[in-house]
Length: 300
Ligand SMILES: Cc1cc2nc3c(=O)[nH]c(=O)nc-3n(C[C@H](O)[C@H](O)[C@H](O)COP(=O)(O)OP(=O)(O)OC[C@H]3O[C@@H](n4cnc5c(N)ncnc54)[C@H](O)[C@@H]3O)c2cc1C
Image 1: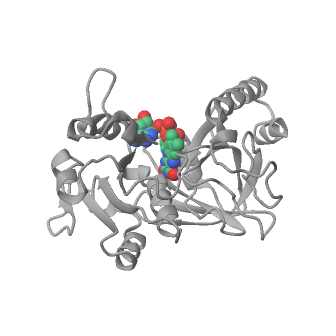
Image 2: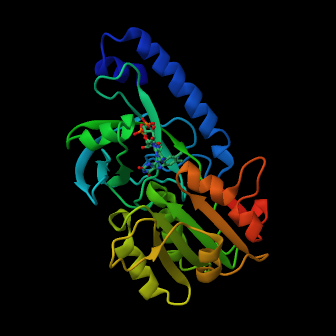
Image 3: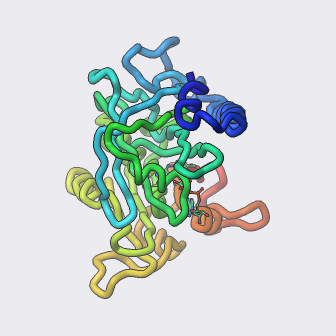
């Protein structure tokens, strides 16, 4: 099925087609390993209306129904399910590995994206995609028109969240890394059985890069004292309502509860930000120096 879709996309690129197939299989195998154990309890076979309910390869082509720019470089794309009553069925914080063959490219591209619609929303799923200058996949997705399709190779497991595992979680996002952080915050707060307190710290380059403020404001109003979102902007405008600068220890000390045995921190951002916070093989990052153990830090 996959190879027939590849063939339709570029009938003459036989070598690239074969390379693409091998690449897809290898990449998917690497990321989907262990998915079967990612959530428990799991029914032995998923209900038929879960488009991505099963671990392993999905190999689903979805039609773009609608797309809108949400800021200067980020587009929200809605893909419809063939069955209007179907749901994505993705475990919280999962991503989807997508496959595309951008115009003019000799090779296909495989990139993960984190759907921002709830797993039980019927009829469609939404991606939020930031376009990078010369970014192969993101430029392709920004050029996709309603009626065209995107191929989804496999679901990729994220963190296996269990309600009430911690008293408090600090969720740190940078730029487009906000998508799994938003998913996790929403998954916790929309679950009446989950009482975990949540602080989101969102670092962006400029004021216009702030995303989900309306949604986070609504959660703050619904859960005062339990949920808080803080935005920090590296290069803010003069009258910016947000904090200035990057995500630092000083900022965390000010806005989030101190690390303790019942806390956990999640990080999702560009490589530079993640290294500064999580550290490297040779050097501790901001979070460890602050007091989180390695086991208390999850990097998406
Ligand atoms: C698990 C996971 C989930 C993801 N979810 C999302 C999501 O929901 N939405 C989303 O927009 N992206 C998401 N990404 C990132 C996405 O997979 C691609 O990496 C991104 O779209 C860039 O791909 P590209 O082909 O356009 O860029 P490429 O052609 O690979 O790169 C072109 C240039 O863009 C720049 N660039 C690429 N990626 C980044 C980056 N992350 N930070 C800074 N500069 C970069 C670099 O300068 C690079 O040289 C996720 C990544 C992972 C691993």
